[in-house]
Image (cartoon, rainbow, N blue to C red; front, side, top):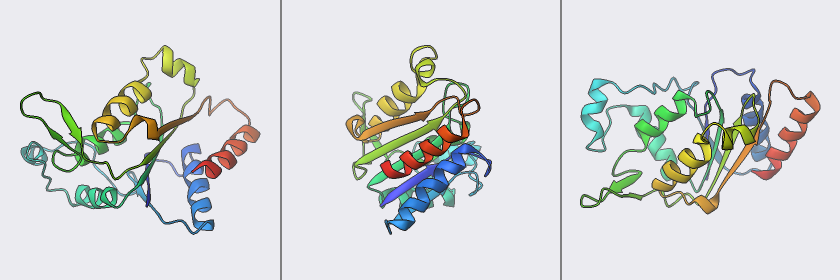
Length: 193
């Protein structure tokens, strides 16, 4: 099952157009999928003191986190859709990783070495789709590349999602490009998912 993790607050955004393009294509192909829409769900990315009491035990009192974990257990493919803000993931998506990817569910830690073993090995393919107002090359080489080097190569890998099965697709200069280029990207991205 494909699971789309979507992190943008505005239905009029280009990110939402990407989500719509992909879901419409999947519906046409009658391919099963589910969407985790963090803003629509009212997900709170901030840890409360109560939640933090449970964190190191790999537990949560938050029912939405448990729902998300169930969806991830059913998943063989993940698609992330988000804007790059300040060269990084939006706080909402970072909070999703912090609160959902708990010990015992998404990873276990070797008590002797401190290394992590990822448990989300059911996920065989991941596509990271991001947008920004700058060029992908600037994000990759000038801004420290929080998407590839940190999110994909470290975080997802530590969760058991293999780097070789993860593809990063970025739409640059979303605010400066032409409508024709935006439409072309939507057409291409829905074909590639």
